[in-house]
Length: 243
Image (tube, rainbow, N blue to C red):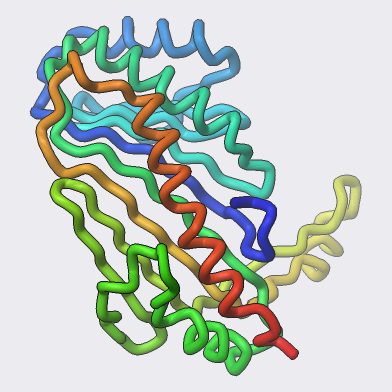
């Protein structure tokens, strides 16, 4: 997926479950096991009895009363890291909180392509808004157009795809190197606004999955594979839109 002109910006794996009240008693144990598995994890400021969050250079790991997630960010996201870290973290949560089943599994990759201006972003949006290629699940889904975006939804039993393509603006802050005097650094710090074309995919299983059948690693591999042709289809359709 990362080899296309669309760059993978964020990638989220989330598992939802019925309220796990054991989190109140076992939060410390859970994060002790997590830091043993992922050295370098540090707590964030988002800590409460009902929700805890740790972060390292790879991702943000979070546990709430009714869900856990791993969010990867940055241009260095790799398939290997996602498929290794996310299921491993869930297994820790599952065992420590004694989960008997999951109520939803979700995988959400978000891709972005930098464009020159709003006009180019809109050309990409129009080109990618309706996917009808053979073999693509969207060939039976009608798009829902909203200002600046298009969304398509496809269901097969408990499995659901939601594809959203949209135009966005992204602000990038340019900071001078360390050592520049403060009075100059303030003047040299610039915020630049860039136009981007965004592809947001939400792939999920919305059903109760018992622990005996809950293989997070296998599910995530399947989810990753299922989203690849969708990204490839969008990429083919927007090729040349900036020319």
